Figure 1 (spheres, rainbow, N blue to C red):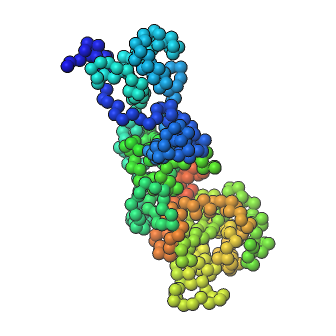
Figure 2 (cartoon, rainbow, N blue to C red):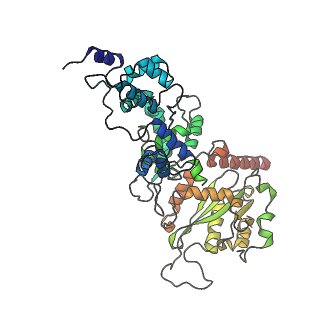
Figure 3 (cartoon, helix red, strand yellow):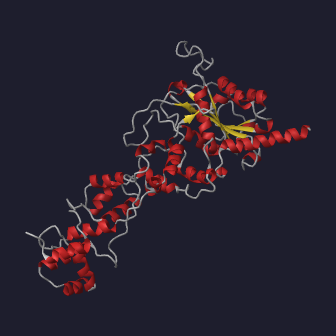
Length: 466
């Protein structure tokens, strides 16, 4: 049996649209309500139940969107017909009610109803039938406005973003460093207390602003940090692979809604070395040479020392290897710390790193209350570096160092053995951090900022000598 004239006319008017298949569990306005609930801090399961779908569906929607709220405009408005109105049209059509009478009942224009029936009726049957679910599916298909992602259209920009995000960690001479062996990405957040992939790991914001520095005349090499995040988190963008979220510092596989994210003094510390006695010039970061330090701890009493210059955020990593006899000799009371993180070892490591800088870059060092710096008096004699200790339970007084330690945990996660990394690996990681652009430095790297100060000091010294 062939097509009727009316059916042929409808198909010529709007083209043949394939079958919608299985009806969706929720329409556009339902998904809008779902994401409004997510924005309020509600869990995906509770938000799904609130709109009348199963918790599993809500979890699937959230994961498919990468936790990023899609741009969904509610269809319930004065301009668009809602699913309830389409159901009323279908019922009236089944009762042979005329177009003008349907328009009066719905408070719509007769031309709106006539156009809806022509556009969204089913054309796969012999007779042109109007069904609410099929009409809603056709309307939502037409409402989509897919756009090609910028990273898909520009291969050069894509390669730059991938390199800064997932490029290899390298030595200062360019030699790549493999880092630890890691398991394959399984679509979840960063592994707990396990090694993570080593990468350059520039944040999307750093990449966005560094493009302006590296390509000042090329306007095509521009992209927003939000576009990079969406390329990472949202499935189907076709630009960046989802497993590259493991290169983000947080290692978070899904974006967390903002509303949901909200839901003893030691004997070595005396009054003259408290942070209150530190020079006032260190507070406003106007003068270089003031440092903050701490240890990041691993399993088996392993540790890595960190030194960060407050003004430039330039980072030094202290290698604290095991001492001879560790694991063999018994511990001796008040004896040397064979694990390598004792006061003597930390003092020697700081002395080795800090003495290579001019005196103007050795103004002060702020540490926490740990006993690993109990020999601070001898350290000051050896290096001329005054040491001050922060107040108890006040990590914000060493905020630059605490933030740096958080960045380093991407390379040295909690619950891992840090003694296996040698001085070369620590140099590579420090070089990676020091060549990463910082917003607080006007998107210069810490190495560039520190080098500028160092060159300025050397130039002034030469001029004075001359």
